[in-house]
Figure 1: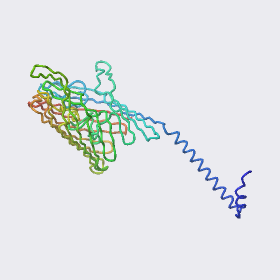
Figure 2: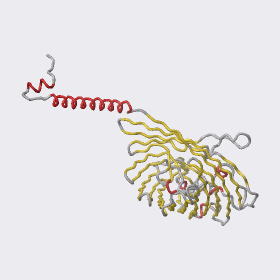
Figure 3: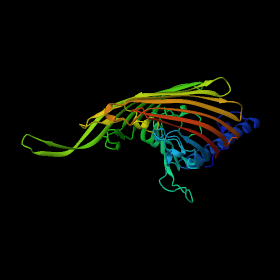
Figure 4: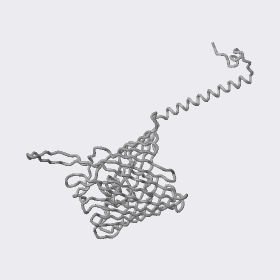
Length: 416
């Protein structure tokens, strides 16, 4: 049996239906059916989109041209030529002629991807440059192999992979042409597991221990527990800062030979370890309404070591009896960025770092550093930066021997 037309059904039910009323009701029903079809189509499209991925590529090409005058001794080779590594500043020698060095190894490439899944949005980031490459030389081709900078993904409140340490507030780093900048900064990337919620960030990160041994420096990868970091981010667009706390095990394995009263010798491996700490306060404060800002960082503790100033100091000393003595140290910087107009800007940075080394560390280990940076950068268009920077760095050893360098750097950078 065929269903009655709408008007007939209404009449059968006892309603009086005019032609105008019937037409209005039918129009409403057709409109509702169109909306249902549109909703089904939208749902179908959303279902098809789930699981699809998008990928973007970017990076920059940068040339650094430098002239460096070393006040004491010959300049370092390798990475110490490409950017300021305070620990490589020569000390105690005779000054030589200025040295010219060009490099494009800071140029980098990144790939970002994201996938919408039924479990939420997953984002990934992989990035490489050509710094610190052991391959290639300057004789013919200047061919250098890429190195991994970042390789991580985020899901929900979690981060897995290699990126900037949670102990490092990257937004506080000065706007400089030098690759790293002030000696007082934290500067480290490493594999980690991070959980973020609101202003909190909690992380377990890859451990590594560096030592003075009396006969030189040593690095050990024999930790039992990861580096543990907690950080809280405060502030607004005008004033933002963070406080980070770190606890880390400093450890190494040493061979032991123990003789008892009967001259029986027991040999083996003993894991020596000490728990150290560090704290970092860092931030950025907007100054005025034209985009100027003040950036700062203060770091202190007895477990800073490789986290501070590109491992400007070692974390601890291995004593003659095999015990570990941690080294108290601190580092700080303050930097001011000024926008002259829409195309010209400058940054000025002052920094210092110092260690309270025990006598057993030796007389030839670094005691303190100071650095200064000042630049002028021209931005004719959004994708291009052209600038010059004056860099000064000094290093003093425990026995009073010192050294310094003065560098003039020109940089040209195209971002895409």
